[in-house]
Length: 213
Image (cartoon, rainbow, N blue to C red):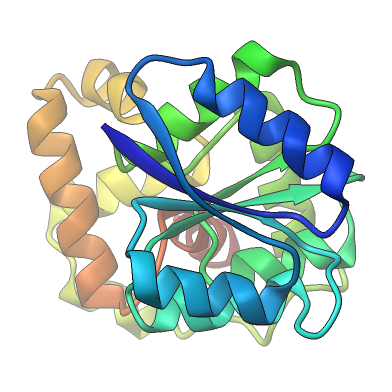
């Protein structure tokens, strides 16, 4: 069962999200938050598997709330936004969000996204994600370039997996590309995130773009 906390300040939108999630087998809505502070507090109390987090909320915005939730290891975060490329998305991904969704996403895609993140795969909607990664790495939102020396800690195989992440590939895609079991891919991803001190595979994808891996 995937336990989800929904954080959205607009009650009608929140009710719609909850309705969709509760209609799906294997997904349980364990709590609802109307602002960022409440989202963090409920994440600490309920320890959901995933927080569906609106980025624009009162008291504490979704980016700041995401940063706290991820830093404390409370849950994975899937952010909701109105536009697919904006400062909020960049901020949320830097804060450690596992991925993002547009608010006009179809119900089926929302459920697929929740399940994708719950499996540990944070790259959602590959076509959009690849564009986001490229924009993130090349645009004004880029931080100072990462030090290539950080790659020295990775094995050859981990560098290959990192390169695939930079292309926005899923674990299944990487498994096919590198001819290895999907479970092995997941292990490599976990190890390289640990070595590079990154919170999500989206951050790893951006690093791969920045360093030209």
